[in-house]
Length: 325
Image (tube, rainbow, N blue to C red):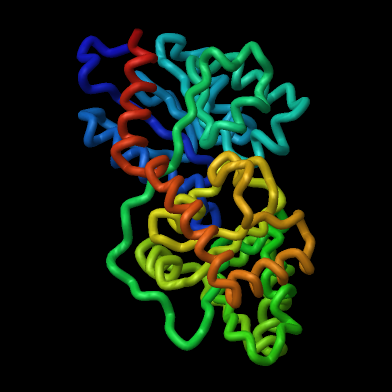
């Protein structure tokens, strides 16, 4: 550590940071943590690699993808405190039985997970150095819900782990009286989806793909929607869930640990992964049953304090203080 422990030199590693196609949830997390850590008085930069920079703390997003930089830092700068922040594909995919990923955790001074259930997925030997930090979101500017339609927002890049076309499939044969419309935000990461999206828009007049939007525009779309759908097969703790909750937009999600850890075990807005029929039924119930929609809205509102920026900032402060001890 540097002698001036009040102001630490912190490097956040986000693999693919300089690639525009890598600007998903981890990119958003890196930017937010940089901003918060700077408000705590630290000197922070983000990069896609560790190349021997003079630092006090390395925060690496993704245990496996950042493994090279974690090992390099531990070998050449053993005085540097290493924090490994685990993502969805770490916790519920790549990390299981992965020697490279587990080696990153062995080298870590501290481990960060984004929701409480994720901690239970780790081997017991890692838990005493694990911190849970919920991702926060600033309340969006006032946005009225869309009128005349029941607007559903899907927010996620086009790649298999997101099961991105599931919501479009669920609305293909809705009753004619239904007012459901879907707006899909996200870039095309896997090229096979480009043709599927174009075909879906031509054949399904309830579905509109908006492409990749700025964070501000994304927040606004979420805020004016009546519902957000998370159709992912795996998530570590999707930032978009906190964004929807803070915006007052109820969530419908696959029953995956990454969402249960944010919304609660007894939340009524879950459907089975890849089950189009269950999703379709949830969408229709949300549209036509005011009591059911109110239950989803109230349950999300109850979770809102978890995602307050001051709470995340305090958790980051506690993390850094633990490294200095």
